[in-house]
Image (cartoon, rainbow, N blue to C red):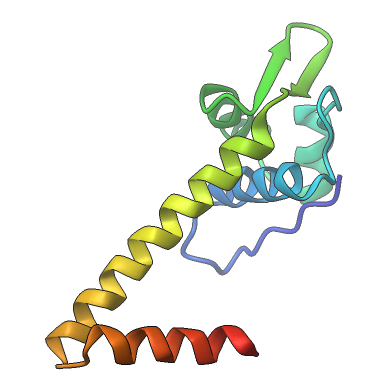
Amino acid sequence: MKIIVNFNSMIPIYEQIVDEVKKQIGSGQLATGEALPSVRNLANELKISALTVKKAYDALEQDGYTATVHGKGTYVLSGNQEKLIEQKRTEIENELAVLVSRARAAGIKDEELQEMLGLLMED
């Protein structure tokens, strides 16, 4: 598993780890039952605190993406791809709702907005 963190980002490092693991689960790079690197190994690889990695792993477990077996490691749980797809769908719906509101406030009619979206989707 390859994770890259941006130390200059405003996003906390543990959140970057969480997002990257979720992305890899969603893309199929991390399969159900696959073990994540140990907390120590990932911390050493990224040159960060083991507590930061532990916080990320705890967040993944709390969100239902992984399970930790004491003394054995952290593993990817099944059913995560559907959960990630639904989560992304909800995010996109929310963003579209904001854009529709902005378009209406700017006086753009729904038909024109639909036409714009259709043109963008052709590319």
